[in-house]
Image 1 (cartoon, one colour):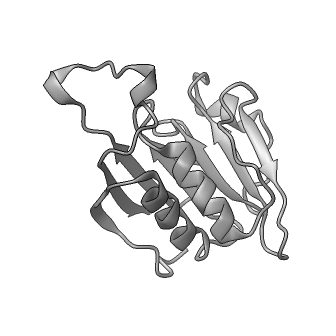
Image 2 (cartoon, rainbow, N blue to C red):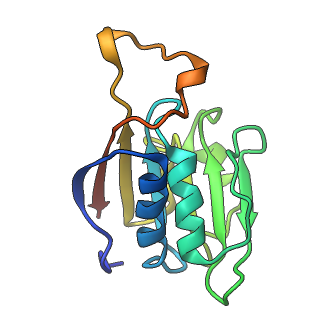
Length: 160
């Protein structure tokens, strides 16, 4: 897997639409076997990013958080790889992720909350960290503010 035009580095994303656009740009570059590990706190934009990635990949939606089902498969509408959108938040180990029996080689796999669990899915992957700055040092953001447009910091690394 090469970087294939996926924009590496750190950038500030100001709106949900800009987060989806970043996802679209990256999704257009992905192929079967690519794994994306998404990390970030609640409300950072992981599912918003994945929604854009799905559009760029050309898969059937809607893309919603897979928190309660652990994994959703979105088939391609344009003859490309399907998207498997996973949530590892409630998983305790890579073995539990493996038990889901996902066709990693034949799909593009996005794993939310996947750091420390999903890296064993592939020899190489993209590690994408989304940060939602919060004011006052508090770790809790009111529910009504989770989806509000506010700057997010996105760091994209290609991990061998």
